[in-house]
Amino acid sequence: MKEIRIGILGFGTVGAGVVEGIQKNGTLMAGRTGIHLVVEKIADLDITTDRGIAVPDGVLTTDAMSVINDPSIDVIVELVGGTTIARTFTLEALKLGKPVITANKALLADHGEEIYKTAREHHTGIYYEAAVGGGIPVLRSQRDGLVGNRIESIYGILNGTCNYILTRMEREGLPFDSILADAQALGYAETPPDLDIDGIDTAHKAVVLASMAYGAPVPMEACPAKGIRGLAESEIENADALGYRIKLLAIIKDNAGEVELSVEPTLVPKTHMISSVSDSFNAVFVKGDIVDDTMYYGRGAGRLPTGSAVIGDIMEAAADKLHNVGTPVSVTMMLQRDTLDYYPEGNIEKRCYLRFPQANLKAAAEVLEKHGIGIASVEESFSVILTQRAKESAFVAAMAELGDAIRLRLEDFE
Ligand code: HSE
Figure (cartoon, rainbow, N blue to C red):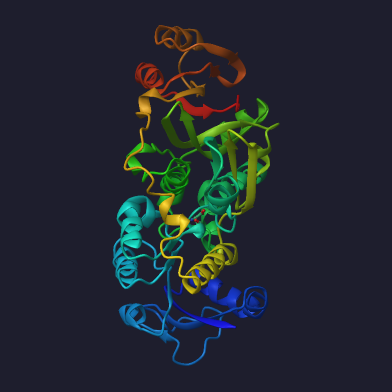
């Protein structure tokens, strides 16, 4: 039996879930792997709040740097959140050659290139399964099972908070704000929750997914993001009547070497499996050129699901350390190329749902036609037009003439 000593930075929702998971299943994991995980230190500025988890005396500290620098600690788990002090802690640990596990998608989206390169330079690893899809091992699936594929497209419901809100708006007709408060109480939402509801958290995760799929750090400006703030119940009702549900969808597609990324509230047909992903569940559809369609599904947020992904990474980092792996595949796959060719937002082609609270539909149709946007159907009773595919730049130009029209993406997965 080998012992691996862990230092955890951040004892919030996920930190407590990781400790709970190790306390519950540490013996099971040791039996399976021959590796005994010891939570040696937990650092947090607040070490007095009860997290519902008992830890031995002397484990809690307010001094994160002393944990990073402690020579008896083999592996650092960064669960501080944010992109400032978390970046410093991560880089300091990597520079000491210590593997770092993180659930911090914002950190990877904003500073991934620097972090992967630092890990490579110091022959150690950064492990980040928990950053995308909560408890779903979706990055591992891409990295391992799908490594022989060129990735053609990825469709993802990647934010548990938004999916929970959309599900309850649809099922219960409740107002947005009261559901958001529940999502916060359940430990799904970021603090503050703006990153969730404005689509930025989903974009962070899309950027990490695309980096792995296409082998280059992807900048956040490659992924235009819209969220669900202000989405009216009438859109959810109209979508329902037309045979669709509204999901906050990340779409990543390889168009002959140029990659398209976007995040926006999207009408998806009720007949497609992704429409039945509800509550805090996430789902990722990955299409590879050899495997064809695959799908990954599970809890996308919350203390124990995210804790499960972190524990999986701790175990992998521990095994890599014991086997002297050096820089693992999770780093090399992000750095195969220096840059990614990505579509400017205006070039992205899509269908749209357009609702015109004021305008006359005939006049609206003329404006759309002028901008080369074909009409698939007109739903006069809702003042809605469903369009054919057209470029985002054409929609932006038409909408500038159409005043207060409401526009959502429509994806039929064809
Ligand atoms: N706030 C995130 C979500 C947490 O709701 O999905 C998991 O990344």
